[in-house]
Image 1: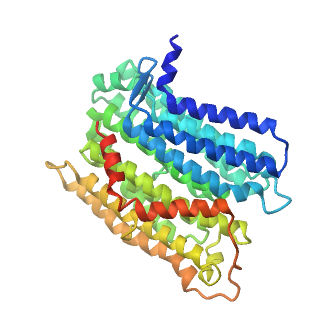
Image 2: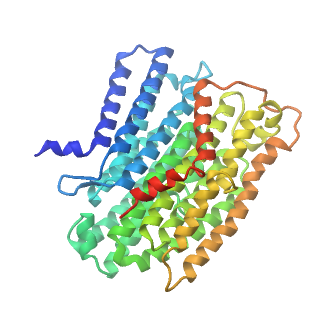
Image 3: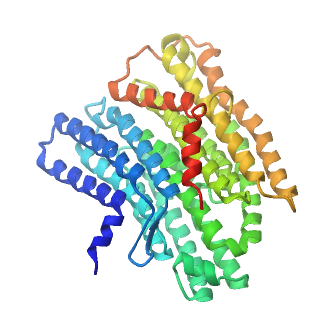
Length: 484
């Protein structure tokens, strides 16, 4: 075997090195609060260093096409690595534990290793050139994620959320593998390029497409594959919920888009119909259920299902470059806005609050800066100008209708439904703003000061919310990388 081919896998190799360093440091350091701090700093520093190979890596191929990466994949790796860095910052207060009875401090090394392992699986999944490597990467990302969801062992909801996640993940993986076997039976190969060259419209390939789409639909939390989402988001520790809602979703969404547009291009008429149905259901059903929620993490779970529908809206366009650009840009903005919301939730939770919406009543009276940053993030998620969320929604709407000159009705109809649902989403996001600024309470959450890591996380996210939309060079960078 020519081991020099590993040099073409620079992001994966450097991330694996980071994982090994954290593993060694966990054994070498004494079990104390100092160890927790050092491991957090080490992991954060390694993730920052990881951004360099992600940004500078060139399109490459290794092991006969088993591993294939491209410029747009490297851009997404950069975005997800930055999102993981924010998660590590946000998790510091939770890991150190404000309560002496907390057991999280004892297992801080395991937390960081699981996070890095999950990110490595996402890297492999996005860079796969073969259905087998894609499946292995998906499982490498899913199994550690289940461990992260169950990390808070003293809470029953955490174990329940992890059980639902792993059971649904196992079932969806089985369905996906069943679909891949159909594709292999019809084409005689598992390599993406080879499948794209010989695949034709037959009942076997259509069934394989449907099963494959269903498996990834679970990962992205698209309706009707979303039933695990609310319970898992509620049960998982808040930093893990943030990680699950943005980083995992972004990797799966880009992978699905690339495979649909490249591998299943001859079946575009069929998977477009699937996307039309799933997008409309995801955006509409999630918005209606979000209005009924009083628990904030369940609320954000249905918000993430709706956002998943908006992300996939870009894929129905006929212009591949614009679709990949809009999808990637949306994920970038979504990382900034959603992580800001979960950072505020984590800060409130660590300072005597809870995740009920009523805990935010009158928050502006005692913690005005935190309430203001939460409002900015919610406005961005709702797509209110001039924040980055408005630009991301505009780009996915434009991408959704691009290139449809012959039969424009259905893409325009789906985009119209998405526009209507944007108004609905504004209503339920404003419910939190109303609680913070308008709802009166005799005992609002006392004033508190955040740690440096929480403040750094909020600062990064706020800069993203304000600047990403107006810095056109960011969109141009992604657009150039998305050239197919």
